[in-house]
Length: 534
Ligand code: F6P
Image 1: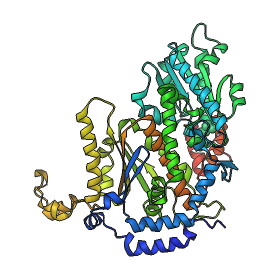
Image 2 (image 1 turned 30 degrees about the vertical axis):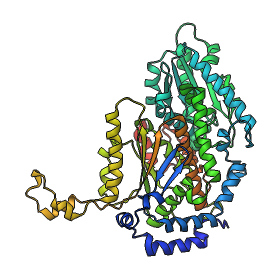
Image 3 (image 1 turned 90 degrees about the horizontal axis):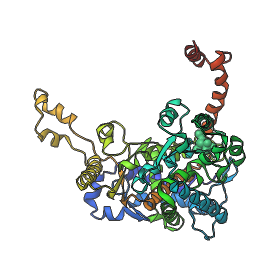
Image 4 (image 1 turned 60 degrees about the horizontal axis):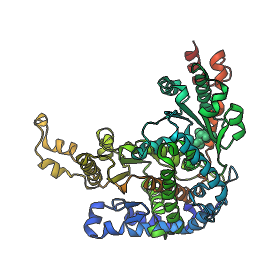
C-alpha cells in the first residue's frame, strides 16, 4: 500500500480541520482588509517570472498545512529521485528525465554527454536549414507531444523567428489538416519533419505517407534520392524512420515522455524558427526553473505552491476545472499544450498500487488568450454557478511598437482578476443607473442580474518579456507543478494508458468501414457505422 498518498497522511486530517474551520469560508475581500501585507506574503519571485498568489482562497496557515502534507508525502525525496533518474514511471519501467535535456554541457546530470551530442547535431542541422535559401517552408508532422510543444512555442516566440521561412504544423489524421497546408507549397522548397517518438502513431504515419507521395509527385526532377534533403525525422525509433526512407534523423530516449519532449530533438522546428542561440536560451530558462525546483524551500517554491493549490481546490473546494488566460496572443496555443501536459499526466483514477482513488485528480484545463476570452466565456467565470480558478499570464513588455494596445491589454488583465475577486453586491448594482431598455423591470430584480458574487480565485503570473528564456521557465514551471500534484495524489503522472483502448478499437473498426461488418459491435456503434457506410 502506497503510504505516500495525500489522504493517508496525518497532515491531511489537520488540513481537513483547517478547511472546515477557516478555509471553506475565506473571503478574499476580508482577507485583504485584515492583512495589508497579503500581496507581499503571498507572492513569489521565481526565475524569469513573478507570481501573485494573493487572490487565491488561502492564507499562510493553509499553505503551511498543505506543505505539511507535501512533507509527509516525502515530496522532496521523490523530487530528488526523479532528478537523479530513478524509475518514476513504474508502469512503463522508465526514468523521467526531461530535466536532463536542459542541463548545461558538463553538468553532472544523467546522460549529459548523449544529450549534448544530439543537441549539437540537431542545432547544427537547424542552422544549415536556416541558411538554405532553397528551403522556404517547413512542415512538422506529429501529434500530441510531438506537435503541441513546437506548435505552441513557435508563435509564442514570433519576435525571435527568422523571416522568410514559414513553419506549418500538421497533426490531425483528418485530411482537412494536411490538404490546405500542402496546397500552397512547392515540394522542391519544402522540408518535411516527421516527428514521432515511436514512429508508429497512426495519424503521423498516415500524414507522413501523404506528404511523401505529394513530394514524389512534385514535378520534374523530384525523385526518391531527394527525400534525404527534404525529409527529416525526430524519433527514438531510428530503424523505422530509415525504413520509411528518411536518413536525416535526430534521436532521443525512452526516458523523455512525449508531453515533455519539446526540449529534445522534437524541438527541431523550434530550433529552425528561432536559431541555435535562442533555442539554447529556451533550455537555459527551463534549467533555471529546474534549479528552483531542486533547491527552493517549500514556502517559496512556486511549482510546489501551485501544485498544492491544485490539490486544495480539487479535493477541498471541489473545483473541477481551471482556466488559463494568457494575455499575449503569441501564447494562444498554451492552453492546448497544458491540456496534454496536465490532463494526460494527472487524469488518472488509480494510485501507483492500482487502488481506486477516493478523490478527484486532474482538473479540466482550458482557456483562450485575453482579451478574446473576455468576450466569450468570462461571463460564466464571473456569474456562473461554478467557481473556476483562473490563471492570468501578463507580459510587461510587448514585442510590438503599439504602446497603446499593450496598455489596454494589461489594464484588461488586471481588471478581470480584480472583478473576479471584488464582485459587486446587489446594493451597488441597485444604486447604478438602470439601462433604458430595462426601465420597466423591478429595480431589485435587475440588481440581482447585475450583481457579481466575487470571491472568485485567480493567480497572476508576470513575465518582464516573452523571450526564449522566460518561456522556457514558464513551461518548466507547469511541468513541475504537475509533478507536485501528481505526487500528492499518489498517481503515476508519466504514463497514458487511457489513450490505448480507443486506438485498439479504431484498429478493429478500420476494416469494418470498408466491409460494413457490424458483427459483435454495440448497438450504437453498429448503428452509426451503418449510417456512415450506407
Ligand atoms: O496519444 C498518446 C500519445 O502517446 C502521446 O502521449 C504522445 O505525445 C502522442 O501519442 C504521440 O506519440 P508519438 O510521438 O510516438 O507519435
